[in-house]
Image 1 (tube, rainbow, N blue to C red):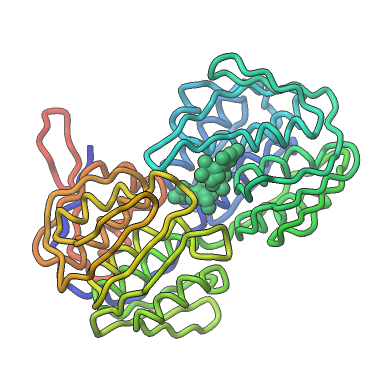
Image 2: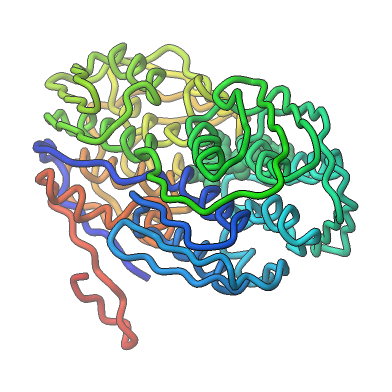
Length: 427
Ligand code: EPZ
């Protein structure tokens, strides 16, 4: 298992370009099977989760190549809609294949993707949506079979604006007969990206980005070439790292409109943010101010995926902040690790009470999930002394060689890879 060794206390400085969005690319890659032929997706980063999705598509019979930041898929040879359990358990997002495979083959077999460190992560809303489109859903233990010789458009109201459920229903409805309307739909930018991709293949979808999405079923979709949006969570992670190290960082290839809630919060902390098109300049020279209350909520409110990163900045802020996590019930696992670095944080149910301390101190800590791991890297950059972050594979799921990205900004960070004889060598 790889480790990251970080010598903290050095302000980040320089310019970085942000890679494509994991959470846009994953549903778009899954949706590619709705058309038969060569689909090319640009701006797709080399991430572990992307690799798992490409392995899943190959397992279904597709051919897939990932050269640089471009993925080329040949979806014509796809011949099965049974998703292997082993791959399902590697990545929850494999559930995105349910809708498109059901629409293309009339049947799909998946497995409960299981929870993860951040929570139970049920899929009941996904299954209810497919049932509303006429699918028969059979659950045999953790195996799920959905059958629908014909999918019929319907009005679907989501009890919660689930990102994945919204996307799965969209992908199933594009080839259904008639109109589907999703109300209380999730509004994330990645859903708007999925709408643009599907419409470029010939779908007729409107409303993504609002809470009501309408899909007019069509008979077939045609392959296309498409470029995914920048990763707003990677962007936000780098912005917080710049602030936490009191550095000066220019971020290129961003979409500031996707980060209005974070920009607002960082400015309240006293961070300077200058915006010029897709470029943001983030700088900070003073101790951040505490924020009385932050609540994670569905987009466009403050995103749960930036909760752990912001907590690091608040952990060294001047004052006490309260952060409430309303999306996932288990997304405070980074708190224990941060307290090992000297943070003063108390958790009560889904609220974290963060009393700012003057500084953090290096320690050996463990990444428990993707964004918690990113937060620990930020903490190591800001801390006095050496931090070793273990279980780095969690971070590699969503950040393309994070140590190279941060080294380009002056960070003293090295990856050590474990070799068979348990020696560790620089990566
Ligand atoms: C997507 O996950 C993202 N992943 C997550 O990013 C993100 O945190 C989340 O949306 C919320 O914004 C991808 O896009 C690949 P949800 P998803 O369905 O679709 C409950 C990251 O770090 N729920 O909106 O799984 C669920 O338990 C990842 O990049 C049900 O109860 O999120 C959770 O509490 C982490 N039943 C809440 O809704 C369902 O059928 C939000 O889940 C579905 C969800």
